[in-house]
Length: 342
Ligand code: KG4
Ligand code: ZN
Image 1 (cartoon, rainbow, N blue to C red):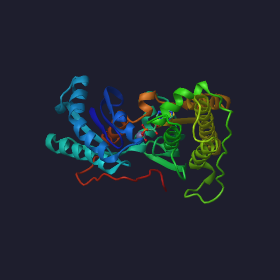
Image 2 (image 1 turned 90 degrees about the horizontal axis):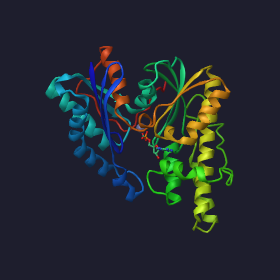
Image 3 (image 1 turned 180 degrees about the vertical axis):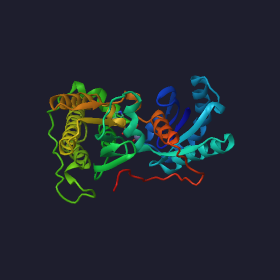
Image 4 (image 1 turned 45 degrees about the vertical axis):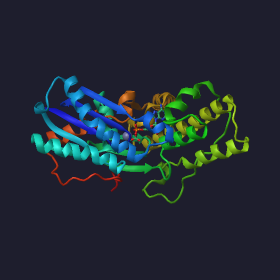
């Protein structure tokens, strides 16, 4: 079966076509980074309008790339939640219209579940249960993945997501948007030990069962801001590079430690990390080291499957559609929706 995936939860319009179980025939992403860069972050109304302009040309390009027509498509999977509501509505409304007009089954997918399963597109031997981390611009959520579709949230950020912290610190350093790739690019030239940032203390007050598996990044961001202030506001190129390197080092260290803690606690040997921040080169290196030292198997998607894409949505949708599941036109876009909260 050919499954069409549609993703429009934030500032990337993405369309993919996969042949089940997971051969990617087309995977097209239209990034809006340039559009939002002057504002230092995503402007929701601009994102929605650009999704509207992009979605039909992207579908046509994906069909062309895959060498098929819409009539060959067996089902449509669309990101339904979480994300910017106006942006989600574009994808969901378009998918519903297409489903109605062409009489194709429709399935709504949670974006986090897409990220959690993205690694399956490239790996065949991920075992269950495993530890899964989604580390993106909107989320830093750690899961026990018991099997496909069965997730338990173990911990999450109590404030900023890791990607959000990258973006905000990059803004403070005048590095532009999106901040993650900008910091990733300059950090290797800096000294990661030149500035010391405190690790968050997370002993009490969790929303979740295991507070020690939560994250917090807003304190580090505030520390960066205070350090910049203390240095008089104007930074040398060297200061910028060193702060970027030290910030990245601290965040990577926190994430690597939490994953290791979760693997030990739940006796898991496999861990899967995805979401935009999983594209970070130091994080990839650090995770590889921690996992090899502790005899864990690490599964990291390629960079284009770490950041937002529609193949991961098509993949999750295909599994559901092949199991005989589908949604009716009552499905709604939803801005906030965690998975795995029991
Ligand atoms: O998964 P994603 O594409 O969208 C969301 O679902 O949020 O993640 C986007 C986030 C942004 O905050 C961006 O700065 C961050 O991922 N990011 C990175 C890197 N590439 C993207 N952060 C650190 N290093 C990178 N190389
Ligand atoms: Zn995402």
